Length: 505
Image 1 (tube, helix red, strand yellow):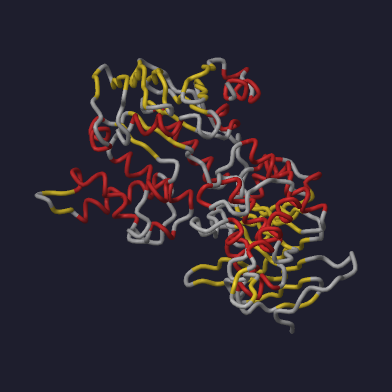
Image 2: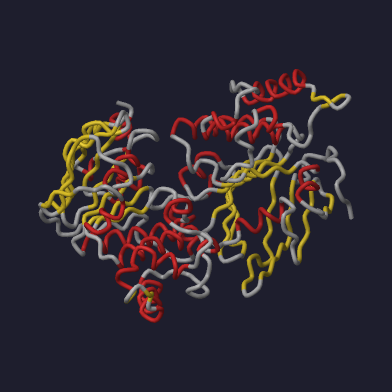
């Protein structure tokens, strides 16, 4: 049994990494059940599966953050036992999580060599570190100033800093967890170019993503997990989208985007000339009863800023908002909620939920007037109301007082939706409704959109995923630099290229 020894060259026939029969049991749940994974040199292996399928647990075991209850890990054919994350890093394994492990106030150089500073007589050799960091970025084919503060970088640049940090440790296995979640289309292409370069250098990449288009574009093989079990591993050349979805969810989906046209009625929400600085400029549109209006554009186009104006989170500088013919004055979100407008925020963890509080408490927060009497919450009524949504929305919770942070992304999204449905809001704004959730949970969110539209609600769906916009919208608006640059009404003939032309102005 080996521990923390450097990697040695092995014959090409020996896989870079083998995980055999990996099992992990948590109290009340089996997270992994005899899972196998093989990664070869110079290969991109995608890992797909619904939230709760076991992807995160498997990666934490590979990273040394968790110990398996059973199974073996072999690197270059050698049986390895990790004593912790540092041991995994020394053996050439790096994990780049969706939430980066960077210190924002430190420079790029300081972050790359943090804890491994190149020093002499107690002084850091700044010039040597800076040159080494520059060489790493040259290897990646990008230009980033090693002395820039990480807090001044874009998300895509911070991700490249994480990759450079991994390469500085002689990494041979890089795990990327939802790496494209907050990137623009152009930034994703740049990331793919970097991954291809890493692959050509013999580095093995494990790519975790809910975005199937990306998996087909970048991966050599795909491993599918479901309910903690290894369902299949397929070469991408022999995989197709429908089969992959069926493997992930364990059942056939009639359509990835089950759009059902509701009866569209009169205008419900009308906005005219909305403006706030350079972010939102003279934005006008209307949403009708029973309509799903898609709003898309590149990151920074002003979509989220428009949603915040509709919800009273930011003050209007110009323009007017009407709901069912009544002009609204939205000074804060409380005014919007009272008027019947709900917002499911883009960042549900930071803005949609209080993660340290229970599911029940999160559900009750915007509904206190409905669930209390004389200033006291009525627990029985609160639990009864929440239980209805747990059943109807199929929210997976162990109990109503389970902390919200313990839920999967899809179930967190459903809790946010449940609290707004209890308010019986007339207008619901979904900002990136399926970001970070798996294909099965996405399907359920789409069914909910259909149901809400059938009830006559007006829905604004903001999304960066163009197939989703095309698949679920009745009409599409496209924004660029704070303005509406186009409207698409003939959805049946619309294309992603048509949307992108409008999105780039």
